[in-house]
Amino acid sequence: MTRYMSEGKCSFCNATFSKAAMTRHLKSCKQRKAASETPAEKRNLQKTKSFHLVVEGRDLPEYWMHLCAPANATLEDLDDFLRDIWLECCGHLSAFTIEGTIYSISPMREYEERGMKIRLGDILGPGMKFYHEYDFGTTTDLTLRVVSELEGEAKSKSMQLLARNDPPPIACESCGKIATLVCTECIWSGGGWLCDECAREHECGEEMFLPVVNSPRVGMCGYAG
Image (cartoon, rainbow, N blue to C red; front, side, top):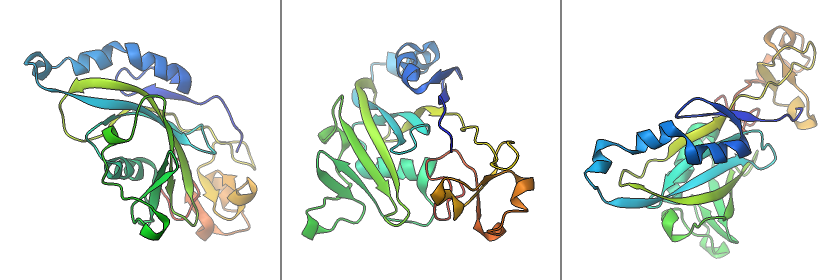
């Protein structure tokens, strides 16, 4: 799959920016500020800390998200969010690696792994980089970075999507049109991206195809978006 300059849309104003420019935009987005200045805020509700995170495919950085994660949310909450948006296909295991410590959905104590019920505010800070793995067979690796620490209105532990990449324009390897399907066998050699029409002639057969979706897990296991 050919790399290109990835762009995405702000969830508040729908403007398009590159991944790096989106970080700057979100600091000054008028619609985002307006959304945060609610009547509830004017009633001086208790404030709580949250984190601005950037998540991207470790080997596929053209797939990325900006999100706001409350400090009182847990790693398990963040894991659930990543599964819902990008990853979940067959209930595979997953784990975070933070400063050398593994936080697993199913921790193995003999390897000194820890569980995911720890709060983000207890382990994260601005500038930190950490990692997430989903499925230890056909693994999808993510890199997460803490852009900044924010103070906002006390809400639930829900994650908020701030921005997300636009679907990469992947070309059909046979005719150059936009690919809609990917062969789960040929993807391992960098190929297998096909449009519906050209897929009919592909030698591996239709049972090997998965839909092209906007996720770093595209083409893996049974992931269909």
